[in-house]
Length: 230
Ligand SMILES: Nc1ncnc2c1ncn2[C@@H]1O[C@H](COP(=O)(O)OP(=O)(O)O)[C@@H](O)[C@H]1O
Ligand SMILES: [Mg+2]
Image 1 (cartoon, rainbow, N blue to C red):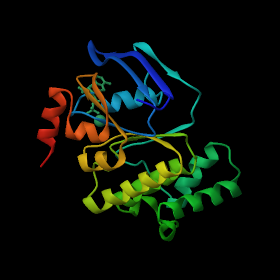
Image 2 (image 1 turned 45 degrees about the vertical axis):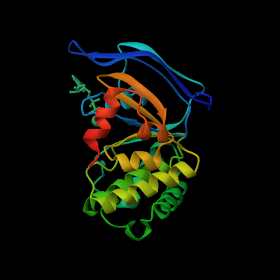
Image 3 (image 1 turned 180 degrees about the vertical axis):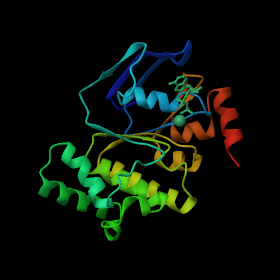
Image 4 (image 1 turned 90 degrees about the vertical axis):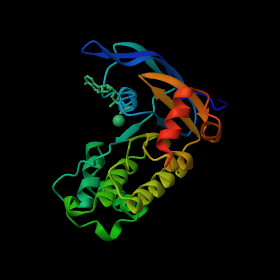
């Protein structure tokens, strides 16, 4: 990998109830767009939660080249019982922005995700894809240096999934580092620079995207690609 690492993960493990969910993971993350792939239960979500500091490792450590501001978006967006706009404003106010500045940034973020027309609608009445874009706007409005996304389009129809993908692309183009998981291999191929393939809580390989899909190095990755490709 050529880019200097912004995060070094050193022998990270997480044990829960006697099971090693993350098992001695060492990694250097330096790419701007990294996609974590692997079978169900491989430990993808757990790894992302450890990186976002939502879980604490049993052993090992994360070493940041410097502290990065970060935000995380999950498979199912959590929408407050208010308008789309107020959902975005909420995150900004929490970060300490004034009411006026929060409103201005929230409006701008909704424009960027193409939802300005729906700003005053109750967020919970929007479609799944629209809600996910509100969640992305809420994260993007904070201008994080790292955005972590855990299967952001897993519960969406193909058209909504493409919209979410376009938004992620735009966020990446704005300079934010992207670290995400997806079940959609086409999406992984289009969005990633680098693929991390994880199996049984261990890193099986870390490969530039084109190489991963053409010539996966491990049998586990070959099997995964065969099973997941229609
Ligand atoms: N809090 C927990 N306690 C016990 N087992 C867990 C916990 N969280 C996740 N697991 C288990 O750890 C494994 C990895 O889970 P997860 O990170 O969600 O995988 P993935 O996102 O790759 O599908 C699974 O076998 C899951 O059942
Ligand atoms: Mg998961």
